[in-house]
Amino acid sequence: LHPRYGLRDSPIAGVVLTGGDVDAIAGLLTLRERHAFTLYATSRVLAVLDANPIFEVLARDLVTRQAVALGRETRLGGLSIELFAVPGKVPLYLEQPGATPPIVEGEETIGVMVSDGRHKLFFIPGCATMTRALAQRLDGADLVFFDGTLFCDDEMVRAGLGPKTGRRMGHISNTGTDGAIAGFAPLNIRRKIFIHINNSNPILLDDSPERAVVEGAGWEVAYDGMEIAL
Amino acid sequence: LHPRYGLRDSPIAGVVLTGGDVDAIAGLLTLRERHAFTLYATSRVLAVLDANPIFEVLARDLVTRQAVALGRETRLGGLSIELFAVPGKVPLYLEQPGATPPIVEGEETIGVMVSDGRHKLFFIPGCATMTRALAQRLDGADLVFFDGTLFCDDEMVRAGLGPKTGRRMGHISNTGTDGAIAGFAPLNIRRKIFIHINNSNPILLDDSPERAVVEGAGWEVAYDGMEIAL
Image 1 (cartoon, chains in turn purple, orange):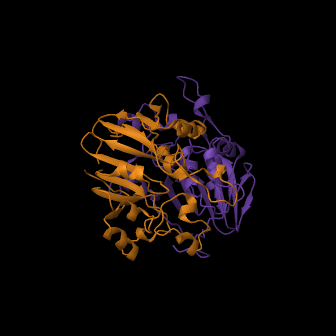
Image 2 (cartoon, rainbow over the protein chains, first blue to last red; image 1 turned 90 degrees about the vertical axis):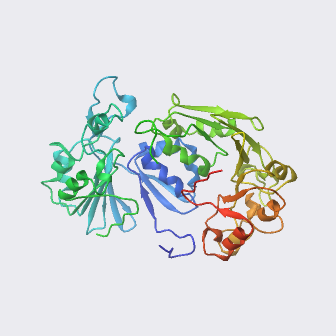
Image 3 (tube, chains in turn orange, yellow; image 1 turned 120 degrees about the vertical axis):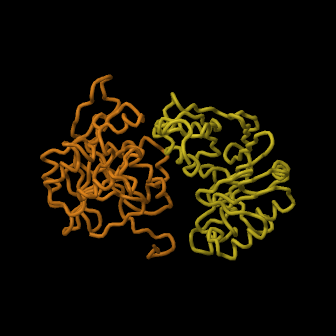
């Protein structure tokens, strides 16, 4: 990829954050070479950045931080974006010891819709369960990137990697009667791609039987360097 | 590489930080899977971590933060380490507008020595100039990783990438009468490896004439995934 305008040009005009966790925000630190862009996020996520001076390497005279309300369409160049709540777990600090944390919808777990007026895609790296409202929102999309954390709800427990099920962590699994494959089956979506895949999930291995299961169900598995043309 | 003890074992017993800038500390965020280790740094660098709550993902019940004084030998498993000041630029916020910042030695720019009692290596990602004291310290080492930011002092200016010379940024260049190659020439060091290489430096290209120059002078150029056996 060659820059179009000058040696350090970048086509990145905006970055949309779907959360304030390390895996959602740490990549910003690699965009610090005095390149101008706009950062879109909920005020809750922007507050996380504000609380960490390390993110001041994204100089505020170049990188505008713009708060986006849930459910409000926002223009980003020739695109429109919309952030929306999806089912998720309450944050760790609100969990009650010993109790299974309730599934809620709020600013904690969000997805983003991106549209150029002709095509529509969704990016949903974390989601606890498929609801009727979410299914209606996604139906007819050209592309959905979706929470692919675990293949089976109890795979980390069985592998001895920890005591938590996917459900306990607020992540839908690929399989099972309440899993992603089942939840998406009735929907008309051109491409479905699992992202946010845990290192315990065997779909990461391209010759595994589990990979064959998700591909057989019409899903793709994201990989480093993946490019999409709609 | 297979873990030796359990599925998520790691051989990393300690991490030594040589600075508080993004390129020195952001990698910590990838070590957050509840693996126990000790973090060694000057109190100034530990204060940078303390000021950024994002680093609390390195849970303090597992990751001990240990302040290390300059010039004091510290045990790290079967190794001993020592942090020491090297010539560097004063930090940005202490620069006088318009003036060339003075070269100083303090906690701002540091190197680390690592020894197992038989072999000795040095890791010095930033250094403004070779001094007699530094030459004496490094002479006889088995390995030195050294500041390889720029090939020529004015290469960023000539490429139109910015107004700053290497000297202005506090980085010695590979070449020139006061460069690294010249400064190391009289020293007896088994392996010399350039690290912290700027994306303007043509030694990154393995077929460039500049790469041939540094290799001809007995230097290696670090690359992703490099492994060293002494």
